[in-house]
Image 1 (cartoon, rainbow, N blue to C red):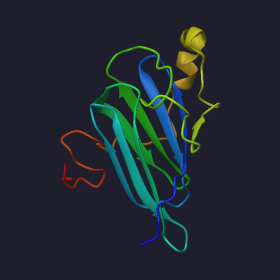
Image 2: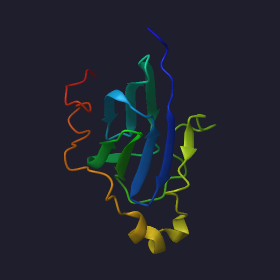
Image 3: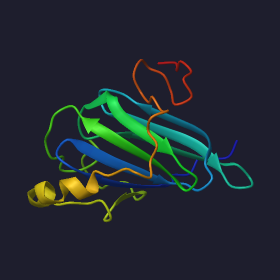
Length: 150
C-alpha cells in the first residue's frame, strides 16, 4: 500500500473556536475523527490514482466534540472546532518544538487576539457552508458514522 501524504492544513482561531481547513480537492472516502482530549484524525484519497492522505495530530487543548462541525466540499474540508475553554491557544498542536511543515496559518481567517471583538461579526458568517446534515465526532464514531476501534 502507498505511504500516506499530508495535505496542507490551514488554521486560525478565536478565543472560543479553531478553524481548520484541509486543502484536498476531490477528496474521496473522507474520514474525520475528533476526540475530547484534542486528538484530531483525518484521512481521504484524492486524484486519479487514489493517493492516500492522512493527518493525525493532538490539538493544543481539549475541545467540545458535540459543538464542533465539519463540511466536506469539492476543494477542501472545513472543520469549525469549539474549544472546551474560551481562551487563546499559543499554537495548534500540543507538542513543543517545530510545527509540522504541512500546518499553515490561514491568513484569510486569522485575527489577532486583541482584534477579535471588532472582527467577530463579519468572520462568523458561513453562508457557503452547509453544516446541517453533518454530525461529526462524539461517541467514538468516525465521519461515516461507523464505530471506530480504540
